[in-house]
Image (cartoon, rainbow, N blue to C red):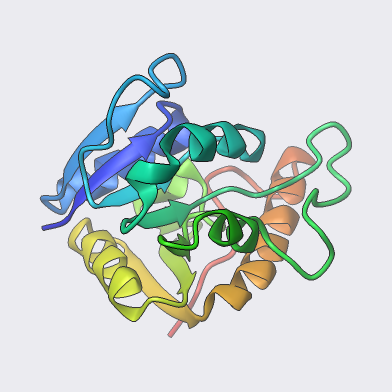
Length: 192
């Protein structure tokens, strides 16, 4: 199976890492206190950090990220108000990251799932589905295979341009959960 280096050690990082490990992928973590001093070990890198932390990682690891798949899970919310996204209109965090890493294959995934839904493999009563967007077909395929091996459904939703819509869904889902309108074990599900 694939190998993953996950930036972050929080709830989402551990839920994603646990899921991938269940599917027999190798997983290593780089915590915020180690960032810049620990090398990336695997071919697929997951940015499981808040969006404001991404620029520091990209600055410290730009050379090591070249040629690798970079999975952006961020929802670029204005966390002080929860009323807007902080990326330019019409853009996405994933597109901004791709612009800074032209030699990497950036993929958007996991931003429309909560940690609890990755761990339980259920979104409410529905199976959890990870939505995946990106321009590199082999990068998306490798991620989708690893997610499915961990026991969760995954769906290719198109090019990296679809990250804009995924971030809008993530934004809505987070604001509903913070407002106690949906539980952190719920969210948006996909039926087929």
